[in-house]
Length: 239
Image (tube, rainbow, N blue to C red):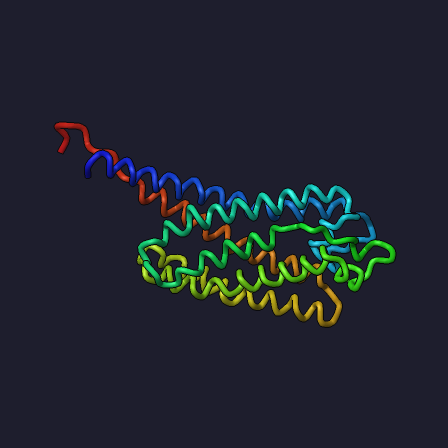
């Protein structure tokens, strides 16, 4: 292989490896954003009843922390999709080409916290109607719904794209699990809001399922990138 082609190949693989690591870390940052924040919400806040979004409300203590974590996690994941995942699947040509964009757009919508929700449901006098009548509450409801639906719909076309490439075959069980677990978790969330019970728990289950799936995608890109690294040429005289 000519030296310049080897260098370009090495550069592409290193970039995919870097963004794969960013993808894994982004899921940790996003998850820590709500796991840590819920520890200081006070006794009125319930992780079973109240949503993750409430911790970003204008009245929430230290709302800047989850806002920063969700934004960093979303941007990092989008970077992973754009510069790590998409190049790794480039050889699949047009098959399921829209799937990575569904993931990227979905996480950007979920990571957005502006405009802020006016109040938390655990605050005295705050109701679901109060939240939805404000631009922050309405925007959060719409963007979160679209973001979740994009992520839930992505595993199907994503696997169609991966299935073309033999090196992605080991991801089949994970992709099949995502195709079942994500819609199931979303159905539980819809049911929870319908009966007005366990909304916080249902949302956390769905978010966790999404983050685990994304972390698996990023981890597989890291593993592939390590295997794709061009081997250095043998020294002169070696057989």
